[in-house]
Image (cartoon, rainbow, N blue to C red; front, side):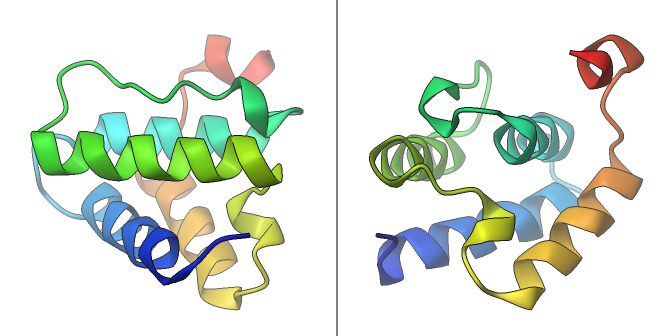
Length: 100
């Protein structure tokens, strides 16, 4: 199950995905790919080009998702669903990614 460290990492990544940091788009696309994955165990635990602290959060969340099969919308917090909707509007996936 997701603990406090994983929830804090998810909130940080959601905040960065909606912010104006160089990694925003890559983080947003990774979060959306995780949310849309049929099997959360298939999500990558590495996104190239991320800052070290962002990459650490991605790795932590990927490992937790792979262990629990969790997605942001299944974690039981409305703020996650609300944030994912905002992230999808701010950084929509390219058409090719969306159709997979």
